[in-house]
Length: 307
Image (cartoon, rainbow, N blue to C red; front, side):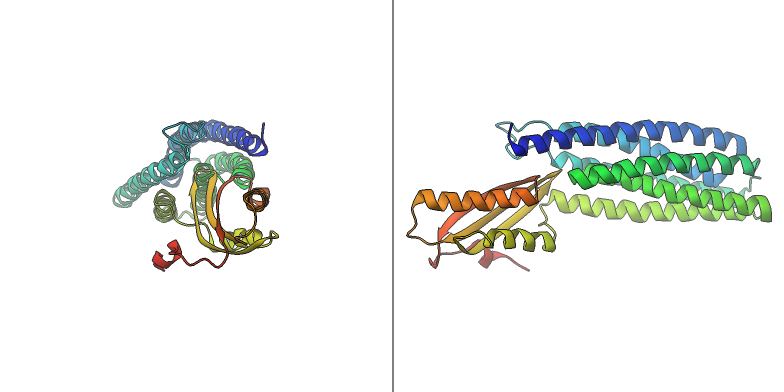
């Protein structure tokens, strides 16, 4: 098995682990918060519970997406199925927006028809337990994203970062309700959580659409890849650099300029060295290299690029 195949196999296992852990955690948190809502009647806990429901649905979508995106290449999908992760992230963004809308609606209703908070101290303790489990999951997800660059796991992790912040806000609101008797703090926190959910959902939707429309890699990464290519002995220039992201895979195309009097075998060795050096730095990259004679006059793709 090649180095690239090993990397892909390890990536698939890590993403599978993160997806399963996410579903299990979301299911646990949802049920714990449902109990807390039943015991306290808190709107801020209700908003956090709805957030956990959206997390569980999103985690299920993520699980399906990462399993699908890691399918082997086929004759009809030679670039793989990585875009499934971006599609799943787009669905997650839509679901989060709907959840935020429901929270805002409930907040308005509670403002017009106030409901007293019961057993605030019990609610605080339950939410602290939720924070602990959320922290453990986020730690695992951050590690997997670092190793795999998975868009779907990154999107899923975002939900739990929001969940962590919302849990902390809920605890704060319950403390205010318990010790200062300010029932309105519960509604204010719920509204803030909803607004934050909407903001993050829009950010997630934008990044997903950028990947689906083949946005180029980050400029720093592009410069690094070009630097790697130019550092190989025999490469005298480059042009027509293109890149895109599909799930955890990165696709790179580059034309390198080489002495036109070298043999085909020698130019092949130079191109292979460029490819290997790029993959060594970016293991999830699939690199396509075209060799051109240095100094030849021809039309380049770069001339048609609009800034």
